[in-house]
Amino acid sequence: MAVPYRLLNRTLVMTTQVSRRWRPRSLLQLVLLAFFIVMLPLGVLMFQASQALTELSRLADVSARQAVEETRRARTLSALALEMERSARQYAVLEQESLREIFAERHDEFSELLAAQSELLPDEPSVEALGRQLVLLGQLPALEGENLQAWLALFGPFAQQTEAMRQATNQKIDARIERIRARAETVQTRLWVQTGAMVSASLVLMLLFSWLIIRPVRQLERRILGIGSGVEGPGARDIQGPAELVRLGERLDWLSLRLGELEAQKQQFLRHMSHELKTPLASVREGSALLADGVAGELSPRQREILELIDTSGGELQRLIEQLLDYNLLQHHRPVDLECLDLATLVKSTLSKHRLALENKGMRVTAFDGPLDWVVDRTATRRILDNLVSNAIAYGDDGGELEIRARTARDHLILEVANEGPPIAAEDRDNLFEPFYQGRARRKGPLKGSGIGLSVAADCARLQQGSLQLVEDARLPVCFRLVLPRQAQPQDIIADHSPLVATGNDARN
Image (cartoon, rainbow, N blue to C red; front, side, top):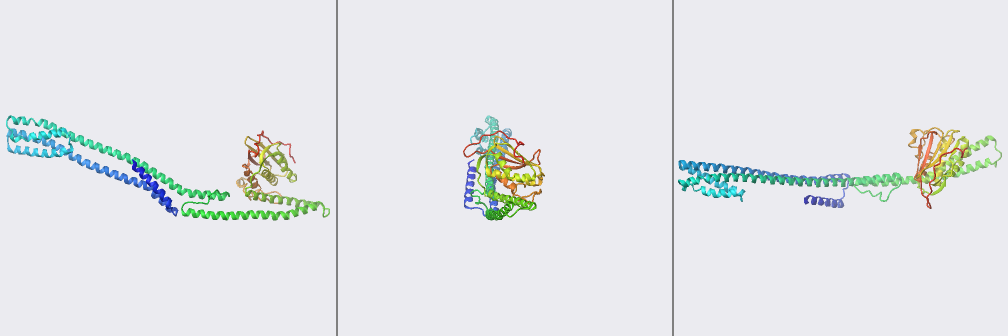
C-alpha cells in the first residue's frame, strides 16, 4: 500500500526538480515531455501489474503441479492398500511364495509413498497411524495360524486410516487453493489501489502540463487584450513558457511599442490640427462679425445672407474642432469630476446654445421640468447633451419634434433624447458609436460631420460608469438613452428623488 504513494511522491519531487533545473526550449519539447511524464506512472503501473500477474501465474502453476502429484500419490496409496490386503488374504488361503513377494513389494512401495506424503502432512494423525500399522503389517512372513487371522484383521483400520489420509490430503490441497485465491484477491486490491494512485498521478501531471502550456497562452491573451484596451497591468510583459511563445511575447512588446508610437503620433496630429484650424477660424469668425457690425460699410441683403452663411459654417466648423479636442482628451482617460447638478438647468443651457439652429430648422422642442438633482460630471454630461442635440439638428426633419425626457430610479438615472427624422438603418447600429464612423444617412447642411460626435458622447457616458444606447421608441423614430448610475458625492450622498416624466411646457422653440 505504501509503495505506490512513495513512488508517486518521488515522481512529483523529480518532476518539480526537473522543471526547475531544465525548462523546455520549445513547445514541441514541452508537449513531448508532458506525454512522457504523464505516461510514466501508467508504465510503472503496467510493470507492477505484469510482475504481480507473473507471480500469481507461477504460484498457481506450482500449486497445480503439487496438487496433481499429491492427489495421484494419495490415490496410489489407496490402491496399494487394497492390493496389499488382497495379496495378503490370497497368501493366507493359498500360501504361495509369489503372493508373499507381491505383498512385500506393495508394502515397500507403500512405505516410500507414505514417507513422501508425510512431508505434505507432517502433523497428520492418520499418517502416524499408518506408519505404525505398516510396521505391524510387515510381519507377514513370521505369522501362522491364528496369528495370521488376527494380522489380517489389521487391514480394516489400515484402510480407514488410508482413506483419512486421502481426505486430509484433499483438505490440504483445498486450503492451499484458498490461500492462492486470497493472495489473488490481495494482489487485485493492491492493483486497484495502484491503478487509482497512478491514474490520479497521471491526471495531476496532465493538469500540471496543461497549466504549463495554457499559462503562457493566457498571458499572451491578457497581453493582447491589454494592448487592445490600452491598459496593461503590472507584469503583463513577463511571458514565461516555451521559446516560441516567449518570442511571440517579444513580438507583442514590439507591436505595443509601435502602436504606442502611432497613438502618440495620432494624438499629436489631432492636437496640432485642432490648434492650426482654430487660429485661422477665429480670424474668419472675427472678420465676419466685424462685417456684420457694419465696420466696412452697410451690407446689402444679399451680402448679409452670404455673411450669415459664412458665420454659420464657421460655427459648425468650430464645433467639429471642439469634438476633435474632446475625443483627444477622452483618449487620455480624463479623471471624472463629480458634483450635484440640476439636470433640467443643464438641458436648458444646452438648448439655448443651439437656439438659432433649432429656430432655423423649425424644430419643436420639449424638455422635462426640473429640478432634477443628480451627481454627474458637468463637462462630460454637457458634451453628451450637446452631441445628441447637434445630432438631432443635423439629421432630424425640418419642422420635426425634439423631445428630452428623464426619469430616476433608486440606483440610476435614465435620460432620453428623441427626435423625428429618418430611422437609423439596422446595418449602422452596431458601429454607430465607433469613432469616425459615418453611416448611410447623410448630414443636412453645408458641412459634413466628422463621425466622432456619438463616439465622444458614448465615451463621456462610460467615463461616468454609465451607458449610451440607441433604443426603440413608440412615438419618435430616433431615440438615444443615457443611463447613469447613482454615485455619492465626495462630501455627502444625494437623497433620492421621485421620477420625472417629460412635459410639454418648457424650452419650446
